Image 1 (cartoon, rainbow, N blue to C red):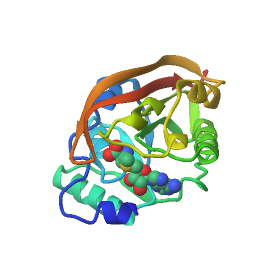
Image 2 (tube, rainbow, N blue to C red):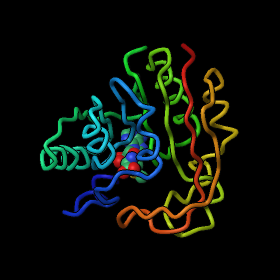
Image 3 (cartoon, rainbow, N blue to C red):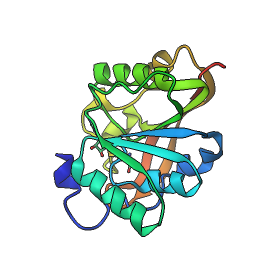
Image 4 (cartoon, protein in one colour):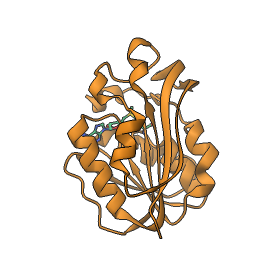
Length: 195
Ligand SMILES: C[S@@+](CC[C@H](N)C(=O)[O-])C[C@H]1O[C@@H](n2cnc3c(N)ncnc32)[C@H](O)[C@@H]1O
């Protein structure tokens, strides 16, 4: 499905990085694992900030466009095609994990968060923005399956062992290419693995 979404020549979510990531990128360090990176807008931005980026996604087409964007911006990113449901990054191998609008069914989400949190080194940061359950009634982006939308309560459970730096549900304008277009209900969290 995502290969079809990304098949056109332009970038479905644009080439500008996500606002929430942009505002908090200074908290990230070391090697950064970007989950569900898609066409590379966030990975390329982070690489341009001097971060060592490992971008994973299930869409080969998306990752090819991510590498093309990296080449065009003269930065280096590592890309890998993975199925997030089976993905198990090495324990304590990254300084940060980023997840921007990666919507999964609850059991897959929980497992991915557990394994990605285990992949963080002590002191490492997990940053996530996604559509909240309240987004279901809006037509500005996100899945139409409420089980794939986020709640802060679920995320607090997923990251029960973490120190919470920021956790909020807000309404904000999300204008990112054709894919995200207008006022939206989102959750934003940043948690840190205890040192
Ligand atoms: C809404 S897009 C967001 C892309 C990117 N994070 C951004 O903000 O531009 C969701 C991405 O997650 C990926 N994805 C969703 N479910 C996946 C799965 N089960 N395994 C691998 N990738 C998945 C899709 O291929 C897609 O690129």
